[in-house]
Image (cartoon, rainbow, N blue to C red; front, side, top):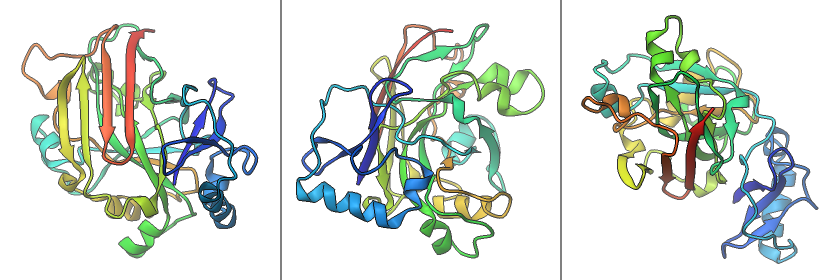
Length: 284
């Protein structure tokens, strides 16, 4: 299923995109798309049945699309997780996953405005596959157990301010948690529709120019290993999100002068089967 949330920011309603591409209202069945729903297999089955029996009313397709998940518990991010991205930044491939966090309040809709922070000179783009957790997981013993906890997948734009991240001391969080720095969506695609998360093409364009064109096949630590690994350091709960890293092509990896984002720039992203995003950047 392709689950999503539509409507004004802060007042989105749960919806579903059916097999014919028609936007359908789920508000008669569920109150929202969140961790509670993802952990409720009986209600998810009822939603799937309603998606095919014609009982769901249609919605205006021009409605704003918000983040596909509400009440996110935590956003765990994996850095330097593609061989080509590590190489372009001059870093060695890590021996274990590089882990940092983003606050849930960085999340906005897939086509919402993104703000270039005040004082920023190095705002950068990163298209990423995001994993959404659907059942509680701790100390996973195998990749199979880890993947069984995955509810689905979506697109994350891990917007980053590189000077804040790298040049201002401390940890990466200062360059990762600026307002609007995690557009998410458009859809939460359930795991049954993504048979191999290591066979997805990721692309990103800036002002119409292709900047990133990679595949999850190039991840250093595949999705199953990332989920398994994280479960040994923290408990993963339904509604948690994992951003799994970005392929080569970020501004930081380009020759000087590096083409960092400026107000007025437009960034578009896509991942096979997971939809597209489009954001205009404006001054904070």
